[in-house]
Amino acid sequence: MVNSALQAFLMLQAKRADILVNNIAAASAILKSPEFKNTKIRKLSAMLGKVKFFTFFFGKYPEIAKSYTDALNEVKRNGTYRKLVTEIFS
Image 1 (cartoon, one colour):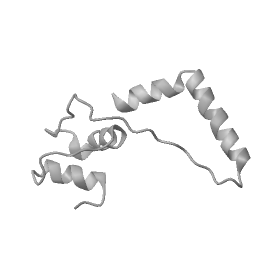
Image 2 (cartoon, one colour):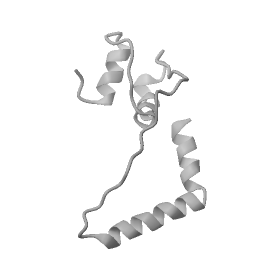
Image 3 (tube, helix red, strand yellow):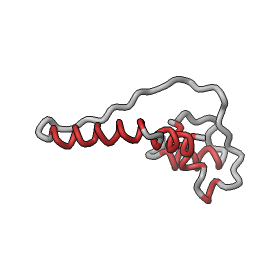
Image 4 (cartoon, one colour):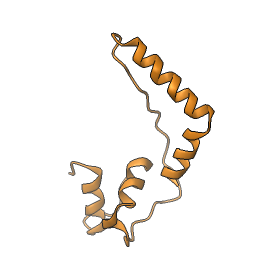
C-alpha cells in the first residue's frame, strides 16, 4: 500500500509494481519532475474512463461560490482553461 501518487510512481520505477492507475493530472505532474526525467514509465494510450470533479462551497459563503463560478466561466470563455488543460495534460 502507498500513501501518495509519488510513492506509487517510485515503486513502479523501482520495479516493485507493474501497473499504476492514476489520474492524468497527478501522473503528468509527477512524470515531469526531475527524478523521472529518464524514466521508462509510459502512459497507455487507452483511457480507462472519465471522472467528473465538482467544487463545493459551504452554504454560508454564496458570494465566494458566485465569484468562483464567474471566474471559471470567464477562463473557459476566453480560452485560458483549454490552453491550460492542453499544456498540463499533453
